[in-house]
Length: 113
Ligand SMILES: [Zn+2]
Image (cartoon, rainbow, N blue to C red; front, side, top):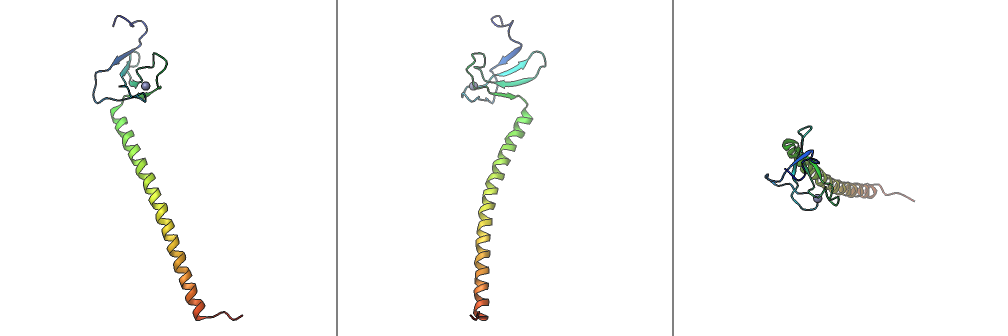
């Protein structure tokens, strides 16, 4: 409290669980703004100026939602891939069926030169 009380408009707390890690791979401290009381995670190297710039508001429900959103996005992407594959497969089959039908028609009604 004594060393940096004049410059810190943010209270930093490292003692929390579960840990959130910044892009450096370091545990990101929970920072509490003295003005707004808002809490956020930040890269612990931000003061040194060589941090990764990690920043995330500490809002547990939003964070969980974000995770779900991310999972959902991945699911959609993978499903889209499967759908594309399926569509190509279907198109291939339809082409085969059309060719077979055309061949049958041609056999029944031979084109005279
Ligand atoms: Zn970092």
